[in-house]
Image (cartoon, rainbow, N blue to C red):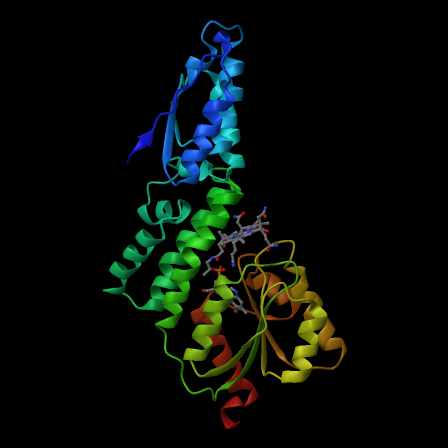
Length: 307
Ligand code: B12
């Protein structure tokens, strides 16, 4: 709560502005916060706004945490935004992009709060319900905020980093059953690093009695092909979250078919849907719960119960 306030010298009186910047840097290095009265710098000078803005940017780079400044100076405020973005801290200036407390906690990186809300939900709902119906919905909203330009890529990354351990925590609460129903190979297709949802699918399939081999994200078709030959799964599950990567599902399906490998393929992810899956000649499941039901149905059809 304590801010140090290093004096800003007036450059018009031939003072060296470096002294203030060095002081800010030194205090920041010790782990303390600083604040300055900005306009003192340009007292008696022409182009005051330009000078204030340039100086503020240097101070931010040195670790300045707060400033008394004229927020009507457009150059100053724009420069401040740019300087904070360079420092990766624009996020702390949280804009009120949503009224929803969960989504707000996710997009602003307040993991403790997300965990607190999750634990509240756990009093009444199962981990899977929270994963699929509460957190996944929240992440869909985060995706919408991103695609409509209300939040930016750093927020998306922060949101993912914030929520991932919570999904993992919920996954850890879901018990595995003996793996006897069948073998599933899971992968997120090449070009796609989204894997939060696929990990949930893996957990839920394990809990339902499947042996699951998750071979990762951004996996090239050739690698999936090789792993299918090696592991001989009953079912291959492919996750594709983007319109640019969804075509990989067809590529893999065609590759397996053209080599005479008869394996059931299920696909899911934000850019997948029933119609698309049909056109790729694969099966579709909207979420982890449906994926488990689908896998059980497939095993019943191909005689997996007798394995
Ligand atoms: C978190 C997230 C990220 C994180 C991913 C972190 C991680 N380790 O996964 C980060 C920040 C890295 C990221 C990056 C990007 N992302 Co992103 N991301 C999201 C977001 C907000 C949430 C995804 C998520 O985790 N949801 C929660 C989980 C639980 O749900 P789920 O993934 O849908 O999974 C469920 C089902 O889909 C299904 N399922 C999933 N996989 C499988 C597999 C099988 C076999 C089955 C049966 C079912 C199934 O079951 C799961 C559990 O119920 C989505 C928005 C959205 N609508 O999904 C955008 C979204 C997918 N991302 C998007 C974009 C554009 C990007 C970037 C290109 C941004 C950029 N400019 O760099 C990059 C791409 C990076 C890359 N090459 O992959 C777009 C894609 C748009 C499109 N149509 O192509 C989306 C839709 C956001 C948007 N609305 O614009 N992203």
